[in-house]
Amino acid sequence: MQIGNMWRKLRSHVWLTRIGAGIAVIIIFVSGIGVGNGTLRVSKSSRFNDETGLPANIDYAGVTQLYDVLRKNYNGTLTSQQVLDGLKHGLANAPKDPYTEYFSPREAKDFNNQLQGSSLTGIGAQLDQDANGNVIVMSPLPGSPAAAAGLLAKDVIITINNQSTAGMSVNDAVLKIRGPKDSKVTLGIQRGADQLSVTITRAEITIPTATTKVLDDGIGYIQISQFSDNTEQLISQGITDFQHKGVKKLIVDLRDNPGGEVDSAQEIASLWLGKGDEIMEERRSAQVVDQLRATGDNPLKGIPTVVLVNGGSASASEITALALRDHKAATIMGEKSYGKGVVQSVIPFQDGSELKVTIAKWYSPNGTSINHKGIMPDQVVKLSTDDAKAGNDTQLQAAKSYLESK
Image 1 (spheres, helix red, strand yellow):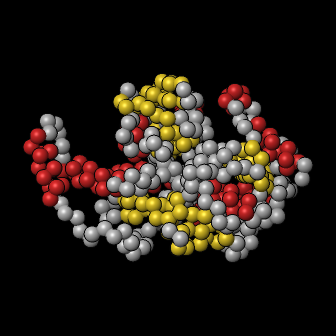
Image 2: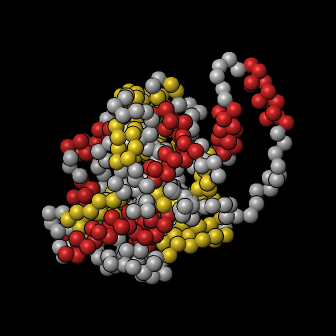
Image 3: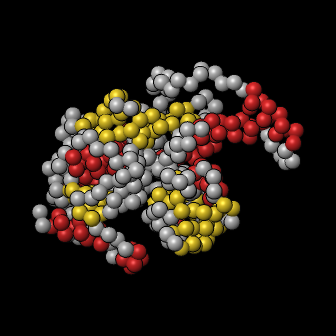
């Protein structure tokens, strides 16, 4: 499976399951939270035939020579396991694709815990890598130490505890930002022309994948922080409450949602769509390799809906938003989304390690690819830093006003 910009689960991810647009890997800063939290599929083995033209075996002569020089000359402590993990991380990094990563058993455990909304220790921010190789903040988690410290989507992390992040992978950055509860980490931030130093106290962070409530004006509100195994169940419980309270209009808040499992995005979009409606399509080169369709269980079909997005909405979030808009089931409001239009598959190995690898691009039902472009909302509504600090949610207010006019 993958997660898409989600992943579908191997297990059925985490994002694997497909990373579609992402889960940006959320290693959670919580660790740090990495990204890759895109569209995920989870696979037990390779899903495709060899199309790369690469040789079946590698000539290890140069690797063996390098290892021999390293072990004889390195002045420090180095174990055989560190060497092997280094080789594997380096091999996965060969494509220079920020969403293709090797996870050691420990890293894989953290990655999967985060995808399932587990309690983790860190600062609560999703990380990604921009086109220039910089480690950036995809989005701080609501209520997290990162959010309280003022980190914003698109902030570039230039140092971690005074160590430069130049050439550093997202996974390495996450490992350096992670740490024990109540300990501190200092990040050097580049925000436009400004450079900031932010010291954040790590905390235990529990990530609910979805919350629901009825707003004062009777509009149902669904906030999804990531797409995971239990997301649809949590929302379905909220839908029962909506039905009891006569809710007739909905706001779906996908702001700062980095993605998650493709299967979860399918379940959520199906709440609005007719059975068999296309949710997204995967392509390798020009060939269609998979299609995701609605299951037909659609208790929200026909209910006026606004989907809120911003620069931290990626992968599975973008898949869901576009599927609803393309089928005229929702209006998108807010700011341009992140733009992660590729799918990753998570492939596990017997020792507990995993490879997250980009396997395809995904397209909306109307054939739209948003990779590196993002989704432009039907109605653009900005949320300034001052309004956010003051608790004046201009985007939510705009969505409520729009629905009240319907």
